[in-house]
Length: 132
Image (cartoon, rainbow, N blue to C red; front, side, top):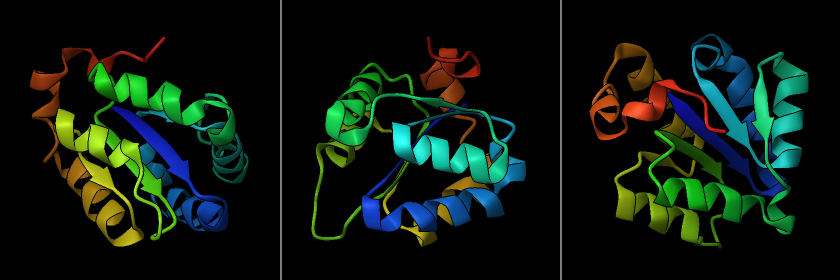
């Protein structure tokens, strides 16, 4: 499945810790991230992460467009609690599972490992193929 990873500046270390803890599960899927977060995760975990532009330079729009076209099956976005972004609204509109905190992310990743999100393969048959 295609998984998007994003994190606010003050939550990047938390995202790295999360991806380190769940590297075994995440390694079985295609990972995409905004530039800084993606490089930090890849360096710390050895996971292959396709990096878009940085969040501030349009990476969030690149990910947002792919959510709108139903190309992501799961979005992990550890954001600042005071900010409500359009990424969460796009996920809601397109029925893409979304985690904005570590507790929800853990539930989704464990569910991913159990096959609980296999329904995404029906909604998004391209989810087995990497995004161009």
